[in-house]
Amino acid sequence: MSVTRSNTSARSRTPAAALLAALLLVLLAAAGCAGGNGPGPESRSSSPPGTAADAKVLAVKIDNVAPARPQTGLERADIVYVEQVEAGLSRLLAVYSSDVPPVIGPVRSARETDLELLRQFDRPVLAFSGAQSGLLPAIGRAPLDAVPPSAAPRAYFRGAERPAPHNLYLRPESIPYTASGTEAVETLGLRFGPAPPGGETEDSRTVRFPSARTTFTWSAERERWLVSMDGSPARTSEGRPLGAATVIVQNVTVRPSAFGDRSGNNTPFTETVGSGTAQVLRDGKAYEARWARTSADADTRFTTPGGERIDLAEGPLWIVYAAR
Image (cartoon, rainbow, N blue to C red; front, top):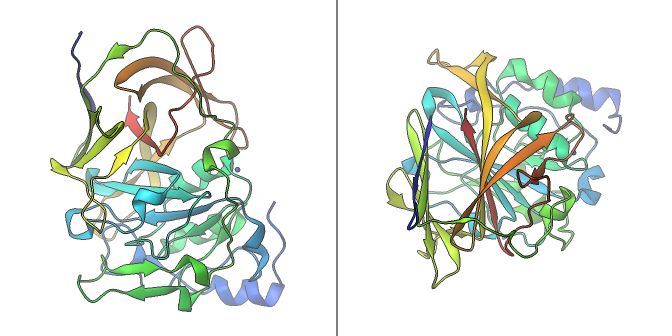
């Protein structure tokens, strides 16, 4: 993976009823994995229906290949994570809290990376199409409320305009989640505020995965980093440009996992516990930064090289995990 820049100056599980847990454990979801041919049977819910209503955030796993674009509801996410998946492709994890759209999608399958990443939030709701059968026990143990179609069948529908598996959508109003009205970034201990001193003027930044790339281009007129996917401008389902107020390129270890897809591709695991370097893009500038997360239950802190906290520009935050 590589990063290209262009510049003008050089977070415990509530116990489930035993019967419910036993029934849901048999729901396998291998067909919903990675580059599979549809969601198929899904994983179990990790808690009894209705206990997710007090969750602070809703996380939705979203498809990000060309047939899945433009995505629906992505522009209203507080945070969008860009992750590497099988065959070097990318997939998105969108986190909602302040504002939840009526429809989100296309929804795809969960990964091991998501479980560690989401430990930063306080028992989030995770909406996803399914998961590999070997991953189901880990999903069941994770401190989150899993809401695949098997747990909330009326919340999902398939759109007629696209082929499966790129046409599964979520109606959030039909799951036990109510938006908190607060920004998801606050759950992570982040805040909006003025930019740090310094920084280097930047026009664009591209993060490359083996088979995908994401580019952010600064628009002073919109005060947003406009997003491009694989060379094409990203747009909302209404045709408007998709943009971020702050972009964090977080340099992490991406390594093979014990999982893979049906085509024989290994599922990469992105390590989000640890520390390393990062670049923060805001207000048309790039700032060198460091990130640190001491444990899976801890928040990720972003600071200047001198140790001062870096605040965010108000608006959507995109975090891209770049392999170091």
